[in-house]
Amino acid sequence: MIKKVLVANRGEIAVRVMRTCREMGISSVAVYSDADRNSMHVRYADQAYHIGPSPSDESYLNIDKVIVAAKKAKADAIHPGYGFLSENAEFSKRCEKEGIIFIGPSAHSISTMGDKITARKTISKAGVPVVPGTAQPIEKEKDAIKTIMEIGLPVMIKASAGGGGKGMRLVHNEEDIVSSIRGAKSEAKAAFGNDAVYIEKYISSPHHIEFQILADNHGNVIHLFERECSVQRRHQKVIEETPSPLMNPGIREEMGKHAVAVAKAANYSGAGTIEFIVDDNLKYYFLEMNTRLQVEHPITERVVGVDLVKEQINIANGLELSYKQEDLKQHGHAIECRIYAEDPDKNFMPSPGVIKHISEPLGLGVRHDGYVYEGYEIPIYYDPLISKLIVWGKTREEAIARMKRSLFAYKITGVKTSIKFLERIMNAPDFVKGNYNTHFIEKNAAFLSNRDKCEGDCKAMAVVAAFIDYSNKLEAVEIKPAGASHASNWKTRKRNNAMSRL
Ligand code: MV4
Image (cartoon, rainbow, N blue to C red; front, side, top):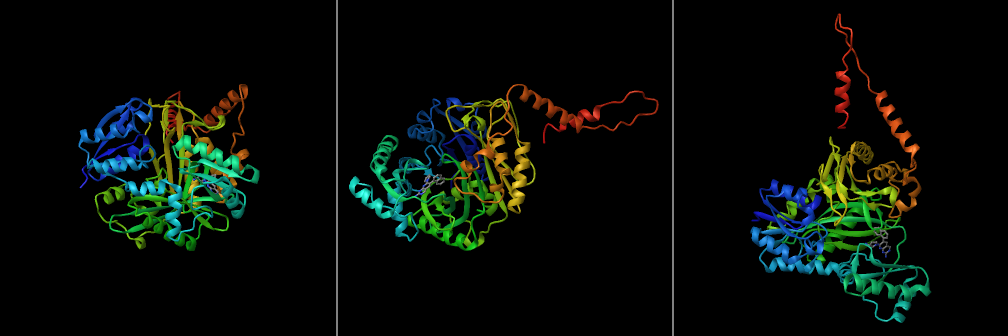
């Protein structure tokens, strides 16, 4: 049985994995770069190993260094988190070779799904709908033009080694086909060292809906329903929710079965996600499979009531899944907002720096997965995610109300954050109605922009106005003791202090 886990990651996900380790009586080992010497995951872990300079490729992405740390610490297993080495087949294989359990799927499953052409083949063989397109990489441009004209424009040209939006081209016109193929190929070659590209029919204005699955090493596969991830900006998810406002029970069951079929076809083990694009008529197509724990996994945990990291560790221990499909139900509604250190009013420019103050929301139905603290400096080297705010409500309406009050109470100073932008989304009529797809942010750009942006005097006036407003709501009841001639204002002061933590 696993007694010690090295977490080959940083930030909020490293802390989140270690929390479950602690609950399971498993000790945790952190690895850290120069920039992360003072990071929360290092403090939280039972042991920590320095693995190199700040840039990821010299630390968190360096397989040899991570393996050396795991051996020194005598860790039985490695949890890769998301990003970094989590979907690296070579790393999974290396762990196996070194006698360390990789908490994730086999190298074979990772490479099957990492190569999108192979994934499409595997998936359509299993009877799951894939987007109409080619089963082979494009060889001759002439043949490609013919195929595209048969499929019908518009089409997408995608890199087989790509994913998450990298190495993609949308083609509307016949005369752009050749240049798009060449462009996609050279981009893919440069980014992935592999220039294989394939063709898919373009599905306009889709929803992005993904299914969480768990598979053990005894042939059991279950799905934990869907996550609606259509609120995204430049292929970066901003808000996720479950259940999806678009779905109905029939389609949910059908897609869930297909998600399970995908995992079975890939001989999958561990936690994974099947991504679909879904059009407004609820026609759905397999897009990609992510062979890791995802950023947005907590909304599933909340609504289904399963600790996904615990299941991952149990699976890695060779145990059978703790749940059968019929045990699982969706309870209520969960929403996650990703809080980034970036400036939504300056084109989402990253805003690294020192956290001067942080006061995170608490209370019924609120989960905060973060890692920063007052005085902590968010490094420039990594993803600027500060935390994830996850709320639950009996209904979608209640979850939105709870998210609004949580964002209202969330105060971070020292760096710019996306909190205000997220509040605007929570107030956007299309979001409130659940009427949105992957074009939501661009479609609502005007509503989501800072409408009270003002400079100089105007800004100062706003500060004064806010102060007046705040002082006006403070009241004091004075009970004058007999004979006393002056009132004490201590009650007012006390309340004033208490209000700084909402
Ligand atoms: C598509 C598509 C429409 N048709 N493929 C974007 C990221 C990558 N995972 C695949 N993506 C898309 N593939 C076809 N055939 C539209 C997108 C897409 C998208 C998908 C999911 C979430 C957000 C998106 C935003 C723009 C485009």
